[in-house]
Image 1 (tube, rainbow, N blue to C red):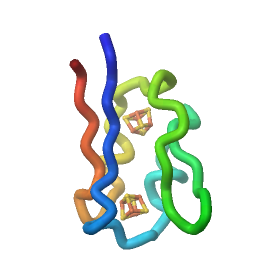
Image 2: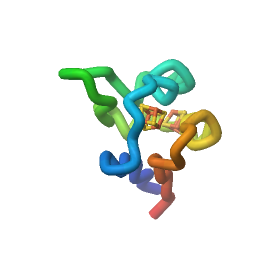
Image 3: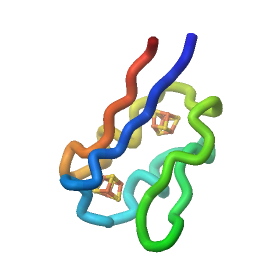
Image 4: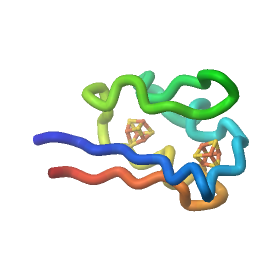
Length: 62
Ligand code: SF4
Ligand code: SF4
């Protein structure tokens, strides 16, 4: 199983909620934007999607 995590930057409000919500170190705050740095660690808890105010994150299993 492969997990793909994407951030739609045109929707992102730069609130950092995704970085704080993920307990698995998938996101990092780099150069003032959230970046997916470790998708392989994703536990598919969907907390990032639930906490994103602008629905800018998609987590998909392939
Ligand atoms: S689904 Fe859960 S583990 Fe995966 S990136 Fe989002 S918050 Fe992190
Ligand atoms: S939670 Fe959503 S709006 Fe906030 S920084 Fe992350 S992707 Fe952007």
